[in-house]
Length: 130
Length: 349
Image 1 (tube, rainbow over the protein chains, first blue to last red):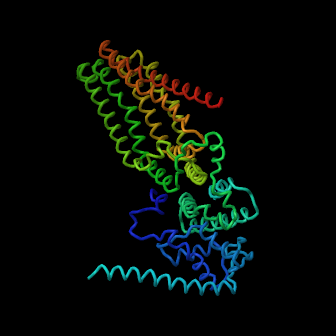
Image 2 (tube, one colour; image 1 turned 90 degrees about the vertical axis):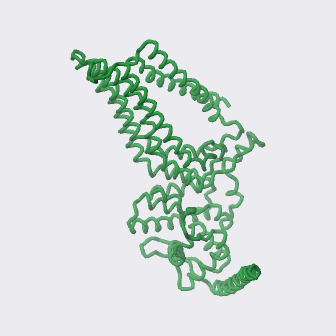
Image 3 (cartoon, helix red, strand yellow; image 1 turned 135 degrees about the horizontal axis):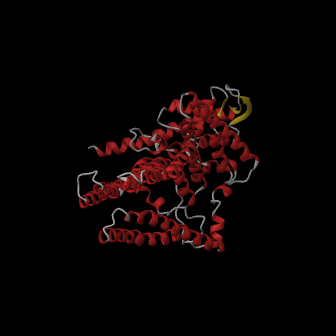
């Protein structure tokens, strides 16, 4: 009952919750990777992101919406109207050719970002221990 | 679901109804609807589902770049008016949704402690009212003075317990002193969140209010009945005193029913006020509060002094309690008069 409103910033929770800032640059990557398997609509995307991330990252609806709109504006995804499995009219998003190319680019970028950050972490640890 | 739609409406109400904005609103509403339906299907209560959906909504500022409304979204709607009336007035930093949630959470946690303390305050004089009379009429085998002494002892003990309970709540509310002191500016986001929180708990609040008002109206019935029907009996006066104690008990029960259910409403009133809409450094509300506050600071001690003086000097413990109801009604009139003057002053600005 009491936890309901405190959950997002509950510091007693024993898990590292990824901040919106930390993952911001890669929400587009998450959305593109999900759309590679087929068209989907906003809520389904949010649900799949939450399911795959487990408790580590809960995406806000406005974050997801701004990501798909940003991708649509840059022509990486296209939208069309369809009906969701529950029978409601929803806007579906489909990845475009340039979206697929952009995804590969982003994946490459992520690997090099990760390797650079890792190098710093490992370097510092090695430097600290004689 | 209505609460969610109302939440979304109020979030978007501050901004122009461009096609792109309406499209965003429709799609976000679709997402919230799906999330809500899903949570209900998973067996969550309606309150829980609404709370989770609103929690996961996020922040409209995030949409600004994609909707091309950066300039519309960044300034707070109240800001232009504030800037016009007092361009250099120092403005308190806006309240964040996190703070607001924490504050509401704290208020929800302390609500039973506060209401119990108030009930104890109301009940504290009952022994002092009844024991001397019981001793007098021979129902209790103690002297009149012993009755008074035990009564005062119980009054002080109950008051002390009540004060101690209030003091422990400061641990919960301490981190939100900024909100309690009105040193924040309201934001449309937090206000609409608080509105939906209050709406969720409004049904319980209204029901509690009905029960409490009914109890308060019926409270004098035992007193009237005892006074009229038992007046000729041997212990008629004692029964009248018991009637008075029952009034206190029923009033306390009414408070105990009502007070724990108004927290969401008072959170809304607190959070939607802030200081931004005033546009000036001096908050009239605060000003008016301080007038009544100053009066209260000497009013209640004076009343206590009158009560004790009258009771001890006149040995009138069985009648002097009348000071409290009369004093309370008078104080209500003073407070109402104070805010009426303030409203009048504000209206003329």
